[in-house]
Image: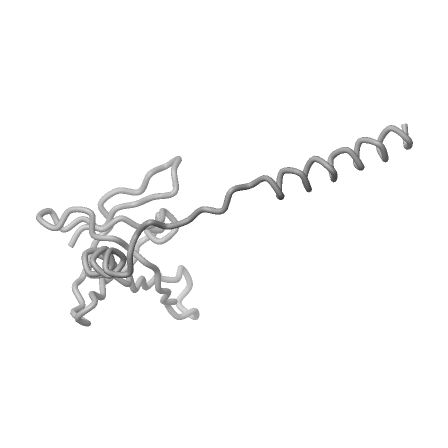
Length: 121
């Protein structure tokens, strides 16, 4: 069994080396101007979420944390983030925008299975 495992390991190492040598590098066809235009559109949609959690015991203080969110619907004021940011317990949260404007947000939806949640402005 040990001889078989050593032979198998040697074959896997050779196959891995062959695969690494045969990979074609990815070359971007986007110019610097293309990247600049894309960032100008995307960056204003990114927000910082400041979330303050309450504590169940009077002797402990509330804790704050920061996370990232993305505006996915400007008209409805919807911000997409990870599920753990919108904890199941009571929170006080605010979105901080690129221009440093701060607006209160509330949890709208927290997916029970997948790692996403929505805040609403």
